[in-house]
Amino acid sequence: MKLVSKTANGQIAYCQYANLFHLEFGNLLITLNTEDLQRFYQYIQSIDEVFFVNHNKESFNHRKLILHLGTESVYFGLTLAEFREFKSLLEFKRHPYIINNSEVIDFVLQLN
Image (cartoon, rainbow, N blue to C red; front, side, top):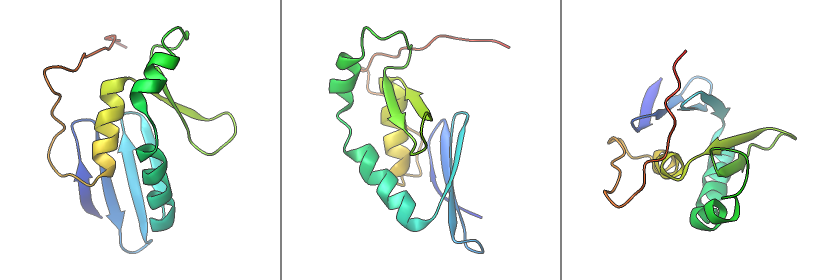
């Protein structure tokens, strides 16, 4: 497998034998062919993250950006900072994601 993109919390690797991309971000692992990865990238690029964070600000979920993963009832929740890192990962950047000082880091530390 060849690493094609990496951030602090995720990576995308390409398997030339299976012609598949393996996208890992946090606890999420998705395997996609080239066409599906391109469609998924376009879907992520089309999301107005600021609108949806504000739209969902009163929702029960801690993570306000809710992404539909194509299967009924399967969603992926992200904070604004996580979404921006995820978006950067899909742009095939090899460097770690750097958060602007102006961004609010919003997370809850959970220990097992």
